[in-house]
Image (cartoon, rainbow, N blue to C red; front, side, top):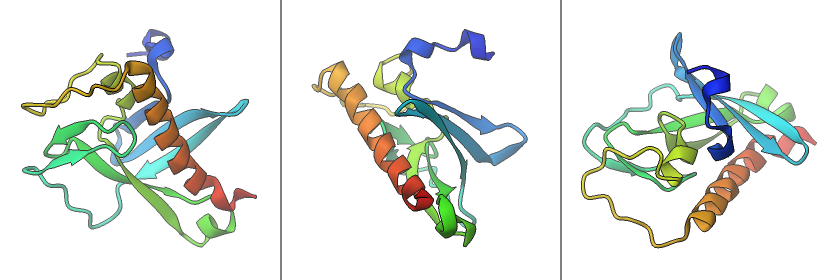
Length: 141
């Protein structure tokens, strides 16, 4: 799928896995009047469970097995140059916006439907992503 074919009106951020380096991902999100891009990596030594259910920290979608990945971003500023990172659990395919809007379904059997209105689920997703990006950008100033 090319950039022009993406459902831009339904994306709170653009995220993708690097096909040439499966343990690397990228995320671009609006912050104020600008866009912020972050490189995400699966930390070394992290084991993925194929039997447990996990929940994305951003969109709160439950996934079976390896549907959620711990992804780490290097912190901005001096802290990041020293190798410090911050991590969060994200949908492995980075399709949080589509899960929240019901455009993509989790493979989790017996998934509970939320009673929270769509607008509030979207707002929660954006808040959770902003909180993660705040931690990444903390040392930038």
